[in-house]
Length: 610
Image 1 (tube, helix red, strand yellow):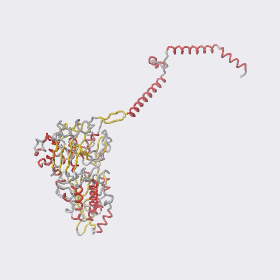
Image 2: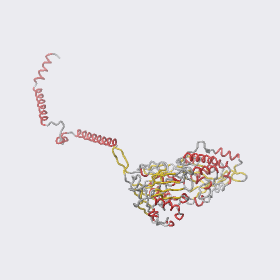
Image 3: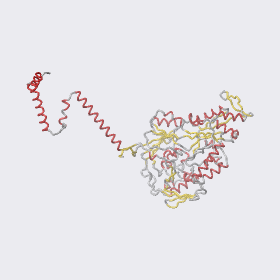
Image 4: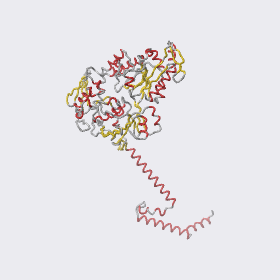
């Protein structure tokens, strides 16, 4: 650019009329801004001014502004919830209802008469309380008692009782109620299943809140036995013992527990269809969160499972393994697989089949039994294999005798002992290879209870035994007749059955030779002097280490002598709707123990500051 051109442009820009006009407009605009600022000191527009904003914004600007407002609002909501959940926590809230389906019907909601019926035991355990109880960890702790003392010779037990406890009708609880309950149990006319356990025990009232029990001989399980519920003397004293099973108090009970009877409904046939309990606000212990419980009764598992499918109930007292697949698609259910001191075994009655008296025959049967296959195919993997009776708190010795599945070895033993194969024709025309020796066929009848999972397991045992030439017949007995027709008379060659030892690990009723005949439960009809002494010594001491040693020796002898094939320890399947929270139980002794931590269950919640 030359000098003349530069000066020409400068003069045009400086003195051009158009340029001067633009400068003047800009100057006036700055003066207007200054004037507006001087009239309104606020830096932001007022609400009155903002309402005119839509009139001056374009459609595009309006959309962008709306989107901005939505983003800001969402951010504020997110911030609120983040702060809310960061500084608060969810806790249970009192209220709500839980309903459960049970198989069967209530007869005696009475702890003194309830022992033979699971439904009665379930309801009684909620309504009544005893001197002692098992907590959610299955530990024995005082309940209606506050403390207890045991003399050095373990013959006298003294219980101090809670003061201030009231029955559901408002009457005070005292030592008189305890003494009356013991006397009722010991009265044969009352017909209590607990009578034999308290026979010969003297109960004495020391004062209104102290009772003393004197035993004829030391009995370690006694303390654990004192968990049965106490009856109210002021209501029961006028009931004749012979009429104890007829009174309305068995349907409309009055107890001291955390739950009170409210009502029940019957169907056209007179069966109780539902039973309602409500929270006892005067309970002496920790009060439950739930406000009410409703129990609905079904005649069989098929109808009960339909009930939980249709949400008639929130849970089932028990779910047999074979129904688990049936409920697979119902994602709202949570399954509690509870450990229990119940084992299933095949008990041999050598008096009914002389072949079983041979040690090697029992060993062959054990070697030919595929426990893992039973657990997998019949029990849905909800069990564990065992080689001796499982006892609460007792772990078997590591060197205990094992009979792992080994059909080849089982066949070799039979070959060695002269058992050869012979073809026979079954009743349905099938050709079967059966072992025979000196004209005697190797055959056995296996008796089982008519329950789907038990029958499935028994069929697998039959299949395994017949593969090595042992002819096996299954005898299936209705569960309502198993005691009367089979166990009472010991009318079986081999019996597949489950035994529950309860909360105390005392196997005396199941394995001492004095229990070989009914009402004893030594189903193998097994006698061994060493076992008798071990079991007698164990129940005479409260020293747990001594009892543990005796029980481990007992298990070792049984595993070696093989009076039964110990199959599995199955879990107790307890399904509940996942809306119910707080159930953290893992172990039970009897089905009613599933309510041991019901005080912690809840369906309603609230949030509080951390």
